[in-house]
Image (tube, rainbow, N blue to C red; front, side, top):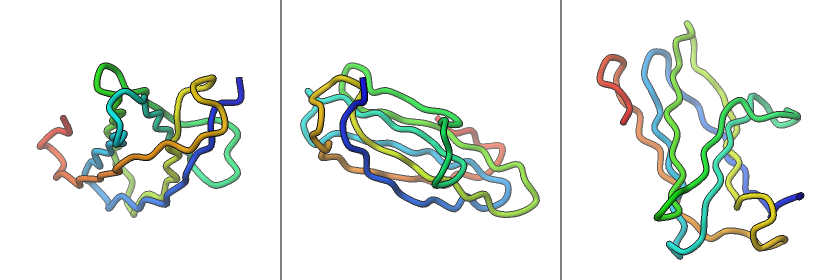
Length: 103
């Protein structure tokens, strides 16, 4: 299916660390879908996560490049769940130092 509407966010990950990203639905009975796109016109997601028991979707993104890494985060609901409704959620990003892990 086509899924529900998504909201898009630009994220810059500094050189070296990880970014831990979490989309937490305000209503825990809802399920978040979090996707990472390399740019605005990307046809496929680089990675993604679907919320499980509590609906929260989380990802760890690493930047091992010599410069900042730019990505687009797409947040919505899983394809076929409540078509055409926008998920209400909290989005958090935590930058952690390289070597400290992400989870």
